[in-house]
Length: 143
Image 1 (cartoon, one colour):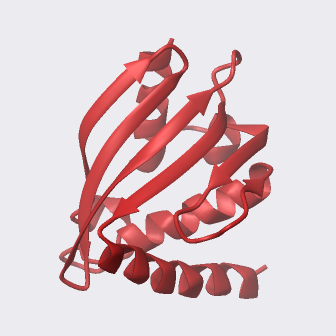
Image 2: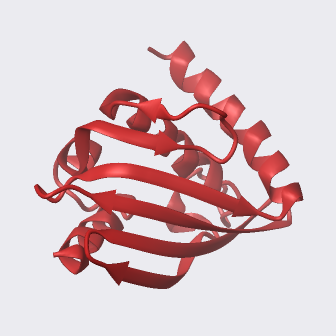
């Protein structure tokens, strides 16, 4: 089941999943950000953070369109077991190398119940913090 669920995640970030985040996130999903101290609870907040992350990680593409299709973001490794996946990624933002993992837990219905992002090196965490804050502010201003 985890392989099928991760396939949906990949479809989502490629913009090819009907229903988008609403299709894949559980209502009670918990998001753990590398730059926010407290866990973010619920589908709406998690969706906001994941959309901001997508735009942030989409920042160094050839066209600088702010999407993952034109960015240097790519998954490099996957470890799948039971209802969990660890996806290692790398990208560049403002010429700085960023390496991290998404730790994703699915519930019995095949929806994401927990999403945790960990990033290295420290320089990358600082860039992500700054960029994510800009994105979150933009999203909140458009609500």
